[in-house]
Image (cartoon, rainbow, N blue to C red; front, side, top):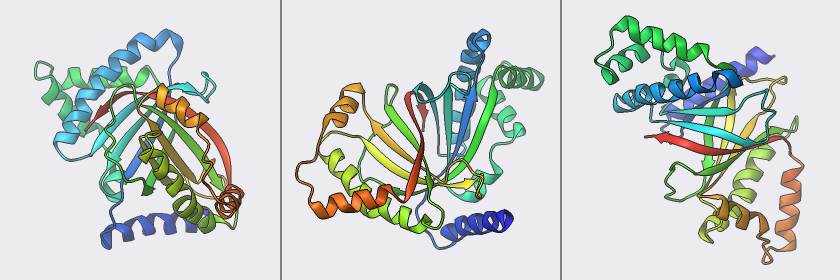
Length: 263
């Protein structure tokens, strides 16, 4: 059954490309670093940024983010999140292979030989542990012109739709919660919002089925948003919100700060 669900999910992503829908495809990597390897990991980050910039320039990816967690996860679980953006599901599933990274490494560091670039890549991978990787498709987002910059704050809310209420949950996010977030953005209480559907891992054992990203330009905007109460909402709207909340289980909320965004 899980295999059938996976095939349906991937087939659905391919169809979205065939019919020309505008979607973004994102790969999340949750990274754990031991305290005695922090310095080495900083070097890894600086080295990899140049390689991913090369991939953006080559149009293999559309962007790469590096986030550091502020709260929401046990430090022994992971402390960083990277997001790689792709234009279609095929590119996402193919990803960037080691040969690609070596090539971009040699372009970014022309003084290094291929062997030296490979050695730096291996050293980079050895200083971290990939705790989890998730493949996702963006299925809804707010209308805004928010620019992701260093210091941007975001909460990553992992959701699991209640069994049998998958479509109901997505409808609630798009028709109930998106307008609420759009209103906050227009009031200057938020920068951006998006809803993502998990492509892999998929199935009943998956930790989450969806992810919402709530983006704020800084802590001032974040705390102002937490204190805001919409006194204009109607009883009907509040009932719709309550119904929407019951269609999913909010598994975890991770608060993170953007260290770098490559576009």
